[in-house]
Structures are given as structure tokens and as C-alpha cells.
Length: 179
Image (cartoon, rainbow, N blue to C red):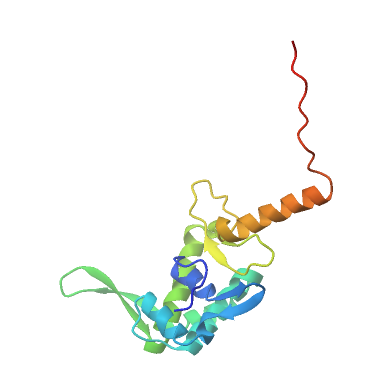
């Protein structure tokens, strides 16, 4: 499978992050050989529709980037969940959705879960050239970057470079010690 950044996010954000930028060039996991089937298998799905995944990814981005719920609601209308009582007497849930849409629909439902729990913790990377999204699980909730190793360090290096170019960073001057 193609190495992509920021794996391991919740299902909905992991789907959003199948589209990323690498050296300023847009990359799409679903354009890679076996990208779709690898992503589905990585998340425990035996199959699914690439077109459905692309549609849900676009709907999730519309909600995240423009706060437009319309496309996401259209996707959610493709399936239903209803409570059922199992033969063992335990409550359960029946999900009715076209099998080709199951992974995509589950990602849409997962996004609703994230928004219900802590909408302020679903964030886009603060780096202006990054298109990745993450769920901030830090204790104090102040995470800004998809990754400190990538975008965080680039931002810090950029600020340092700007300070030194503007003369803002002055060398440390030692004062003579007092006798």
C-alpha cells in the first residue's frame, strides 16, 4: 500500500485523509493500484465501492471545510440503523445499507459520532499547505498540527527563518560579570 501520512485517525477522518499533498503535489490513495481495496481491508471491510468512498470523502470535506451538511445528509439517507432484541434477549442494532456503501456509510456515521462527542476536537492541520484532518486527543486540547515531525517542524522552521531574515533574532550578548 502507498505510504500516506496520518494513519490511525478515526474512520471518517482516515477516509478524508486518503487525499493529501506530498511536496506540493496532490495525492489520492484511491488512484493508486489496490488503494481502495487496501484501505477497505485495513479497516476490516471485505469489499465496497470506490465511487461511494469518493462521494463520502467529498461530503465529509464539504462539511469540514465549508460547514455544508447537505452532501453528508444525502449519504446518511442511504442507510438506517434500528434497535433489535436478539434471540439471546440482549439488545442490538440492525444496520440496513447496500453492501457497496457499508464502509462509506460507516465513515459518515463515525463523523457524526465525533461531532456529537467533541466537535471542537476535529481540526484541520494549521499548516497552510496541509489538507489533513485529525481528532485532537491531547489532554489540554491544543494540538495544531497533523504531525509535529512534518507540519509542526516546518512551521517552526519557517517562523525562525522569518525572524532571522528580519533581524529579529539577535545574538546573545554576554554582560561582563560583576566582581
